Length: 104
Image (cartoon, rainbow, N blue to C red):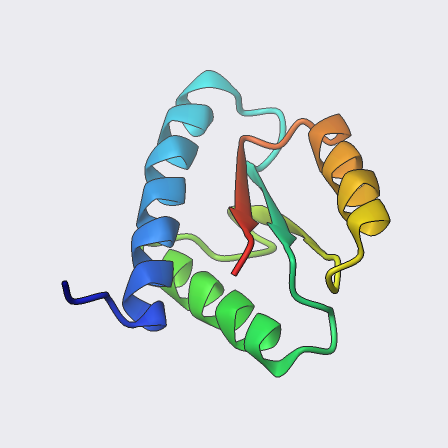
């Protein structure tokens, strides 16, 4: 079985998040839609930075500009289970429209 390259997969995730965000926009105009991202990778991990950049580029290709049309709260745990719990709780408390979690 063939697997999709990470760039393609991240683009699919961004597309799915975008679909949810269109629904969120229809429900509220008080604030820009918020995406919460929770990643097992660390903040200094080059792979984490690449993934976030690809995700933002995919959103931009779908017409969403981060900081203008949409907000992203990104949490990277670096493999620390205690940080994972804390950051997951933080993100849920922010009541994002979508949470994207990455364990790989």
